[in-house]
Image (cartoon, rainbow, N blue to C red; front, side, top):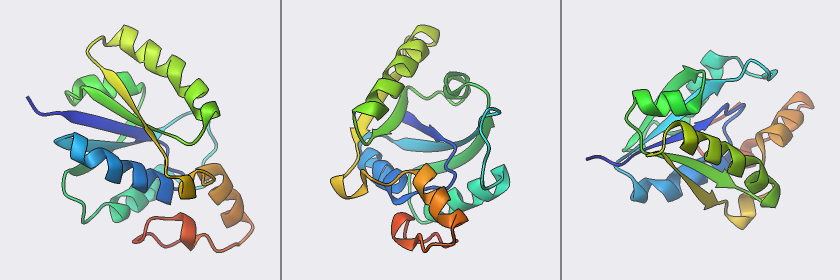
Length: 152
């Protein structure tokens, strides 16, 4: 059986931290599906089509990665795509405290689903999509915070 992982997020925008987590996760799985989600409670800087385009551009030359858009619950997406794992990146203990109960609820919905937490590299631990969005809104250069092939 193939080891399929889902790396879900809104990716508004995708950052070097997200990219780094996928690089770390690739050797662990046969395939990683980057699931570009839409959360109705969020206000996005980029629309769903643009977020999907940026993620596709970031990973266009990376084998073993598939990019898909989705709405709804991540656990339902995992079930449809036969994924056994969810990958989440952690920058700090606040991320862990946020992610842990979600992983526990997902496990209750789909017991065979495991969440794998990967620690962000120290040089990326300060990078978040929220901060990058704020920099973009204020017309600051964000190239150092984006994957190599992504330009805004």
